[in-house]
Figure 1 (cartoon, rainbow, N blue to C red):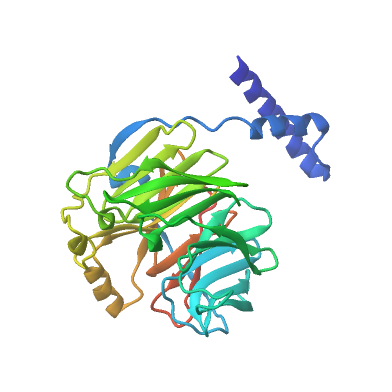
Figure 2: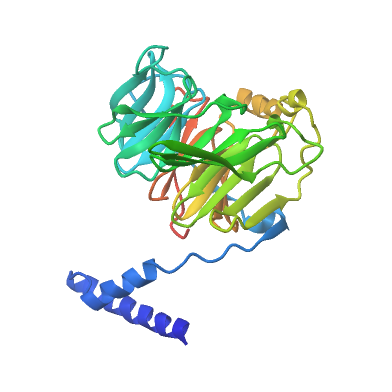
Length: 372
């Protein structure tokens, strides 16, 4: 009965809102109350278990054609990271002695470059973006040298947080962080058996650093290289996700109950077991990039070996896939982009941005179809 009542109210509100929108008026008090109630409805539960699925679970592959954008800042695309936040496009990529560049959107006008490369104060050697829920920041930055966390604030200034990650026996350079707050983090790191998620919390006079979830799953693969992948968290929906590079599988975890849903596709996976072979160019690359947004998680997918991709790129711009999932691990859509490169999805989830590794002007935009 409660569901029917809410459904009826929604219909009523929808009709009333449509009428009001024609008159140019704002939501009435009762309408706003109902919108607030609906916005606080709990996210649907995660269905536990391992799920064997086929690639056709996405339906037909949607082919997208990119629109190239010129920038007056020439640089070579390396291990690039990108954030598309409202009117700014923030890029981590080496350029003229700096690590970071900012462009305006939608015109890609160059704004500034910052983050000097080096070993001195306020200089960086191995920075990476850390997604944050902090309204004061576009992102946090993790710097492998010194094992520190920084804030990229709304003035596009990098400020040291005074937080030093505790040293341990984990491999430092491959940590992936997500910031719940400036004192509360999830991160993925290598372990003796492979990979795991850890929960790090800072207090005024202490800290805790606990194993949260083990990402290793095979007795035949007991090394960090086997479990390389990409990590994302949705604080609001209480979910985290990990997509594996060497296996076509993803794990979705409820961050409160630790209930887990594992998606396993039917491709033959992970035959090579030692570190050298797992990192070899003849090993199939599955997932190797993620953009975790509020409504969906988007994952870059190859499905070929680096050798095959290199041959394709000798002949043209290549191609890459983006797979879209909801936060309960349900496949939504699969897109085929007409260039190979690195990607991110805009905050409003309307646009896919790609940095092509073959183009002199590397930035391309792909509109996500409006029916999604």
